[in-house]
Image 1 (cartoon, rainbow, N blue to C red):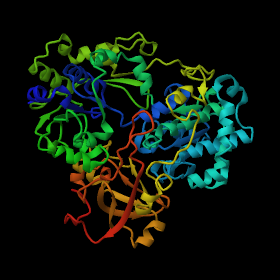
Image 2: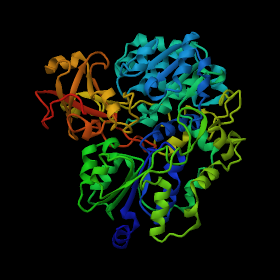
Image 3: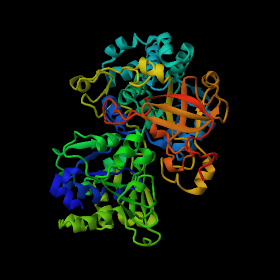
Image 4: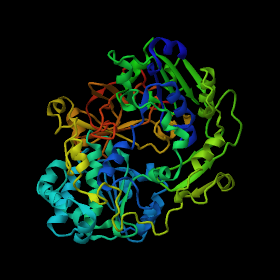
Length: 611
């Protein structure tokens, strides 16, 4: 069937779709990258998570190299900014608790009262998407009161005077109006951050999912340099450790990037629905090969994605362990192995250890790993290049074949014997204590000539979210509530495990969080059935009234499969599928909705629990 499509429309009529379903490097991005590059298929931009934030940090500090996560125990002021650490970063939380027991103040900046916020000393609740304004307001106070580290700023930063001019626009009063906070809270936060040592800011990907997500990260990344927080162990900024892993590993040996023709068109995975339904796309996507992912549940603008998957002329192949919502639309569902059946090399987003995942049992039935799936498919298409004959062990060994000092002493044999090994970071790891930022200037760039050359604001800035009351007042008149889709389920990992009965039973049902000030005028009571809607679709679910969200904001959990949700649809029915300012990330937290009360589910479902 693929050969027929290639003969008619060419190989670019074929699109792969995958992300991090296996959580391992070899099954995530080994043989598949070689196969699709050799085939000449349309290239997939895998930018749904992390890319916008990383791009924003790169503009300010040159990359995402963090402080060592374990060094949080030395911190005395910890800001968890846009991260529900208790749920999404379990291995960091014990170190934060230890720091807290040692006297550290833990601040959570989040519109929602999450499990993490409940365990913090201080919860700051700005309006969604206004984090850059808050950071600018904090910097205004710090500079105005002379709390910045003048020595560090002079030695190791670029553009301070231009930044100072920009900060004049962000008085506590104006920042309060933009963020929905009290001016005094902004002042108090700025003073506490600037005068506490060591101080660390922990970021994760939630905030990047705005139309100006990269700029949000760029702006926040100015704060540690402004106060000299990088000087001390336990100070600075912590984002993702994956950059350390990929500096160390020989990932290019897996991907073989030279095989890929960079002139072939690319499609951002955030906009899968647009790609599958674009009548002007030439050639159209005629075949979709899905593995390591479940776009029917996790891609934004879900109804557009489903419309594309329902096309009669789309040939869809899904390599999977379960009959997912995506697999239900497939022409072929082929069995994939689980982690207990295949070899893999695991890196991490939040710690600095490499792990060898060794199979505990042989693959069941006809299941094969992703690597073997693409070996066999390559053979059937007549691809006889030697690189398709590399075994999974060959792939692991090639990834470890690096002379980078972080990999010193880490071999396949050691990992096979011990299971895991820490990256060989210096014991006194403090990446920017004496500057040496990997930026064009070698300094933390408050002013970025590179951004200016690309047509972006060269200074940290705040721009209202595209779909927000400030960014689109006319749309907000129809849909006045800001929706946040949260990673709040303890028993799911995005959409993984969301189909397992015991996990569903533990999560019970998806609930819409709503503030009493928004519920009362709509005649909505606690646990009522409601319809959440916008121009992209509707979701029906029950509501929980309380102060977990601030007025003007509603929240529902992400990851639920529509087929297993009581109302037959899930959060991504509503989410936007625009792109962030740079980096290619999605803006699905820029979503406005309205909420109305319902007497019953429109699909006839009357029970509360989807099992």
